[in-house]
Length: 421
Image (cartoon, rainbow, N blue to C red; front, side, top):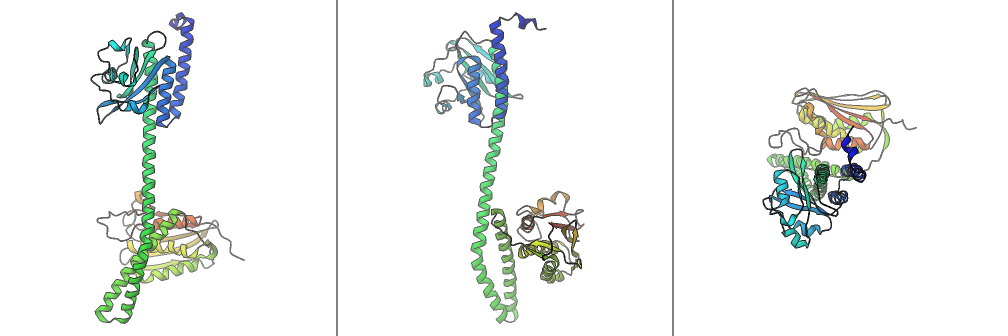
C-alpha cells in the first residue's frame, strides 16, 4: 500500500485526484483533435487551468532560424508573439530546450537568463515560472511554459504534471502537422488533376479543327496525286489518323474523369460486336503476320451495352495486343457465359506484363516502359479508358500474365442481361 498517498493532506489529495482525472481528459481530447490551431489553444488553456496560473505558452523550435517561436499563448495576441523570436542562448526557454530538462523559477526577473523583450512588448510582468521540454522520442521539438501561479509557487509536482501534458501535446502536434501536410498534398494533387483534365479537354478540342483540315487535304492528295506524291500523302494521312485516335483517347478520358460520359444501354448480342472490332484491326494484325482468331459461342450471348463505347474497350485491348505482340504471334478473342455473366478474353503471345505492373497499367498515362527509351507508342490512356467504360457498364476488368515474354490475358466480366422479348 502507498503510505505516502495516505499521509497527504486531504485537500492536496483531492487536488491530485482532480489533476489526474483532468490529465486523462486531456489525453482523450489531444488524440481526437487534428486542427492545429484548435489543438494549440486547447493545450495552453487546459495547462493554465490544471496549474492554476495566469498564462501558459507553447514555443516551437524553428529549424531554419535556429530559434524558438511562440506558437500559442493564453491571454496574448498570437500574431504579435509570433514576431518575437526567442534565442536559444539567452533565454530561460532556450535553456530548457537545449538542456532538455524542466526548470522551476520562483523569481523570473532576477534570473540572468530571463529574456525580457517578450514581457516589455506585451506589457506583462513574469514572476514565477515552470517550463518543460516537449519531446518526440529523443528529439526536443519545443517548450511548454506556465507563468505566475495564482497561489503559492510552482514546485516539482507542477513540473511533473506539465511534463505529462507536454509529452502528450508534442505527439498530438506532430500528428496534426502530418495530417495537415497530407491534406495539403491531397489538395495540390486535386489541383494538379484538375489542371490535367482541363488541359486534356482544351487540347483535344483545339486540335480537332487543324486535324480535320489535315485529314481533308491528305485524303484529297491521296486520291488525285500519283507516284511519290501519293505515297507522301498516304504517310501524312496515316499519321493524322493516329493523331485522331490519340485525341479521341484524350476526349474519352476527360469525359470519364469528369463524370460526363453517359451510356446508351441496350440489350444486344456480344458476338457481332467482337466480330466488328476484329474486322477493323485484322489488316493491322496481318501486316505483322499475326494470327487473329475468335472463339465465340454459337448461341447468342446478350449484354446490356452501349455498342460504340464497348467497341472502344475491345479496340483498345486488341490494339494493345497487336502493338505488344512480336511479328508472327497469336491473338485470341473469346467469349462465354458463366453464372449469368458474360466473360470476354483478349489473349496474346506478346511481351507479357511484370507481376508488379498488373494493376498499374490501368492508371492514366501509365507506361511500363521508360518514356525516354520505350519502343511502343501511345499516351498510356487505352487501358484506363477500357477500365472506366467497363465500370460504367457495371463490369470489371483485369490483366493476367506469367511474366516477361509469357504473353498477357485481359479479362472483362459484364453483368447478366436477359434477351429482349
